[in-house]
Length: 363
Image (cartoon, rainbow, N blue to C red; front, top):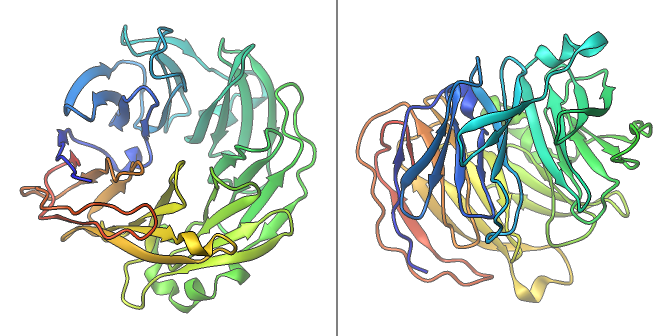
């Protein structure tokens, strides 16, 4: 499908890496130093700027899920390096609630926010927060703490199973903690299901020197298949079936390929969009004849020439049609897209070339 260039300019900061979200209503939100910018990626116009709430760089932001045509308030959740967490009304541009911890856990809530997410139910909405102090906390949308659980090791992120509301995967640098009794009313107690996964990744051990800052393990539940967990290493991606606790698939990086930085899983097709440390984006598709197993075949590539993990902070937001990629870069130049052929659902052959990166731009 044809792709149309959209550039949203604005200076970013290294701690803003990962602070980006594309909501179901079509709005794009991203952290910009201590502020949050809300933009329309289709027109390239900034529609709102949320300022005055954070005293540190924004580390995470998340628009509340809602139907595209919903008339309810557009709410946004954001956290920063000081541990502050705010809920914003995007239309008014005002912070309506601050999630502030007190009592014996007050110190833990002053550590940087490393992950957050909305949990939307018919009766009430909740917010799940993870601080750098390894404190996992569930809040109500009104600002009340439901429960909080401390951990004895450093957690880097969490991911919620879309098919099993009681299962959450917590990620450390080299292991996974599977919580099987997650609840909106009581704190989880089954925290012993820990899996060391570094032994599974032979390609990553073979080239540890390439890992850099991207060496931290990332994990994502598949939005299409039950019990499938994607484990991201610098030089390979493993597909793990939690029903049998076995690795059933693998995506191995090419010999001279740039290490993986992050991935995005399509919600409509068996496609994995891979962001690499040099700014390239590759799309790996599972061919239709391979649905009996997990085999990933041909891939398309979109490259950002000259970018490297050392000189830029890169965050990716891509829909099925390769709709958007946000990049925060510290170098200057022009950025443009060239011709793009049609995209096949299973064997992708699109080629996008992004020339010299522009200053602090989102593509």
